Structures are given as C-alpha cells and as structure tokens.
Length: 208
Image (cartoon, rainbow, N blue to C red; front, side, top):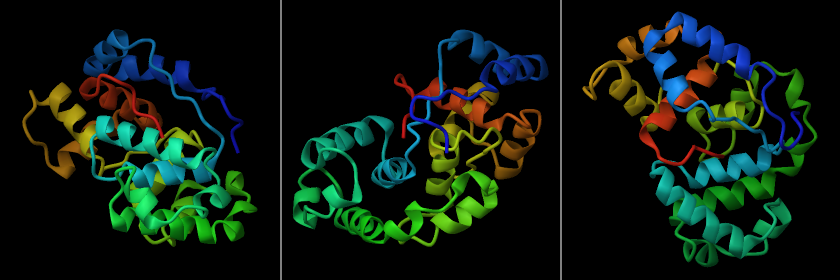
C-alpha cells in the first residue's frame, strides 16, 4: 500500500512521454504543470469519499465531504458507526448513500487485512464491487487515488469525458469508441492523462 503523502514515482516520466505522444495533451500538461497526484494510503478513506462523491459535481462533493468530516472526525469504521442515517443526511448525503457508507463500515474488518498491493487492477475492482453502492467507477477511484496505479481509464467518469470532449472535440459529444481511441495513445499512463482531463473542467483538482 502506498504510504500517506506518497507521489507516483512514474509521474514525471509519464508527463514527458504523454507530451511526446499527444500534442493536445502536451499543451494541457504545460498549462497545469503544477498538478500532482498524492496518495492518502488509506483505501477505506478513499472508498467512503468516493461513494459520497458519486454522481455529483466536484464542488458539491467537496462541500458534503467537509460537513461529513466535521460530523465524523477521523474517517474510520468505528467513528462512522457512531452516527445514524439522519445525522449523515444532515451533512448532505442521500439516504441511499448513507446506507452504503454504513454498510461498508460494518463490513470493512474482513477487508482491512487483505494484501491489496499484490493484486492486479482487475482483482482489486472485483473485491471492492462486492460492497453495496460500490461500482466499477468507485473502485477505479481507489486504483487512481490510493493505489496510484498508472494506467486506469475510468470510462464512466463524467468529468473525464467532458475534459476529453473539451480538449479534443470543441466540447461536442464523443462516443465510447472515440474516447477509447483517444486514450490508446496515452497507454501505459492513462491515470496521468485522466488527472489532466479532470483539471481542464474543474478549477480545483479532483481529490478522493
């Protein structure tokens, strides 16, 4: 598991290779050259934050998350299980999201001791989607923001899609096939490219 505060060792290499392979991405990287990806080293934290951020804007997710942290304190299963659904809803969570957060917290003990580092991306996704409320997108956020896996392409992420459409197609809609086609030249550093696509549409960097 990456330690808290760890940055990807591949980040600068990826930026250079992406810039050489893709002239459009090169200009985005140059514009947002200070962008970083930093792991919190805590799968549970990122899992809860990702669930709370599902299907809402980065700004809205940030607001709800701040309220949630003020209510909970340190993000641990024990602290979360001390509050009820109504208290969570007062932070801005829907009832369903509050149920998901409580369910993950109740079951986390059996997952906490797993050796996540030795698993490949597909194995990690398979483990995480067993939780109610956790789909492939949420698991991909764990791969990117906690595990620092280098080649994740979350095709279901609206912010990333908008970033690609803005940068490569004047904001007009692109099909899944076109999105995948653009991403081909980003391999094996699609995680890094994705972070820059997010940055093109959100004034504050995406965090989980």
